[in-house]
Amino acid sequence: MTTFATPDRDLHDDLTRLLARRVPQQFVTAALTEDIAAICRRLGLSRPVTLAGNLVVGDPRTAAVLLSAHLDEASFSVTSVTDDDITLAACHRLPPQLTQCRITVLGYRGDTITVVGDTDLTRDEHGLHATPLEDVRLGDRAVYSHTTTQFGHRFSSAAMD
Image (cartoon, rainbow, N blue to C red; front, side, top):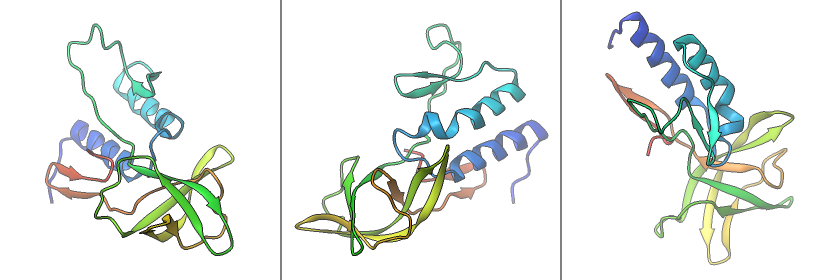
């Protein structure tokens, strides 16, 4: 187990918490602004603002150092729901060899992004389909089911590309 100095420990914990969040493409500003704003307050930085769909802290034109990161994930959009099937559309370039995988469906319920559940995605000549879940809705998103792992100071996560 790696040990960290207190400031490093705080940043480590922040990164671990952010990477544990499941955030589909185009949900970042809604899902993470308040979490990142809290980190910025603690570090004495300005509140993040949305610029071209990305959260930005400070002014990129005058920054001495610029850190860029992806916290969103390749995702699928729920396009139809029946009692027997969920149909999805890929919101990213789909690997041609992908025929099935495990996905996590997420959706807005009120003002909160909620995990609806995990299911199996299959791809056939008719498109992308998943086993129905209770409370899945048109417009919900799904992400690949992955876990975040840590090796010393290195992290691996579905959101880190």
